[in-house]
Image (cartoon, rainbow over all chains, first blue to last red; front, side, top):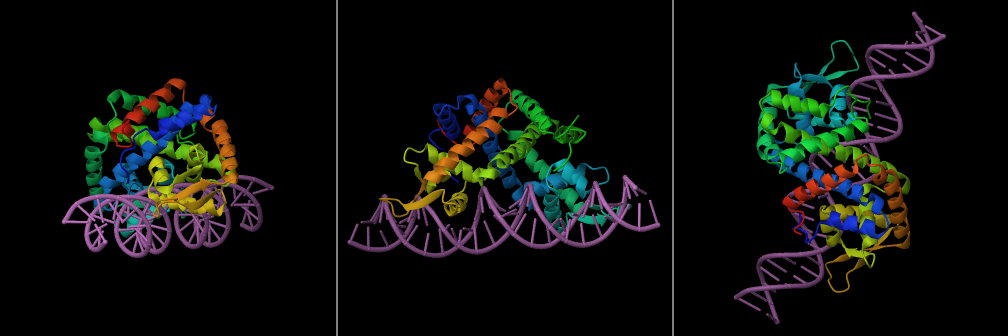
Length: 168
Length: 168
DNA sequence: GAAATATACTAGGACATCCAAGCGTTCGGA
DNA sequence: TCCGAACGCTTGGATGTCCTAGTATATTTC
């Protein structure tokens, strides 16, 4: 989408902030902007790996989640909560996964409101293959050092907890 | 969108990875997933603050960028490169900002292909007010400690550089 | 037990991002 | 000088996310 810039645009932004008298918040601004940009880069990498499988990250996450559920099935609201996305996003993902025959919707045995998402065997197989690809091509080559990974997990974990993601 | 979960879903995912024999990449997977989720939380906060101004993060970023340009104007391709988004995303943002009279498009004086985006005085005023709000309500209360901020800037900066964002 | 409240999912709409194509302008080599 | 290649922007399409509202099913309350 573009060749490398001669200078780091986020570092420039940080300098601009300082120059305008906002030095107090310049560093957090830079850190937050860097997180936004890093997410963008990682997402592009992940989607690039998943494309050959006909998957997007959103759909992969759902498949992976189901593959770890004992029965291979989960209520949609449970999936929404665990993936931390809006229920309508799950509806959207399930629509497409179902069309691809990777999951099926089935009624909850006791609660008429609830719909279960169930992995098909094709879905399970594809999830496994996609995971292997991601492990090899993205997670295994993140470019983050071991210490930095530990630090990220801790710092971002604290942040997510403070943001109300989980109690623990 | 949901009440706090009893347990950290990313930590669970990491355990699942380890349990399936992917311990080698479990930690980077967790770190990357945490970055994705953190971005989602931060974006929601930012958009919440910008909503009263009738802005989204994408449009705010463009306004802020223009406000730091000496002349208050930039070619669209320059904006695309600095914001590191696809040119069509800039077209989209400019369309809406122009409709809101916050920027205007003007032809480049010498290159007939290029379009300049120029801040209107309303645009400049709004950018300033929005920045103040973000500084107070988001960047000034990020929840990240000073040392963690420095660490994030360094680690993510290295990552972005390795990803080809900039040379420097 | 019936009415009010809460929960689960889906439909429609607003935005953002990217890709593929198309149209015009500019550059560069023969 | 001229024509092909490169560049800049826009349009149209596919996805994903969220919000608001609507429908159906449970649960609570009186």
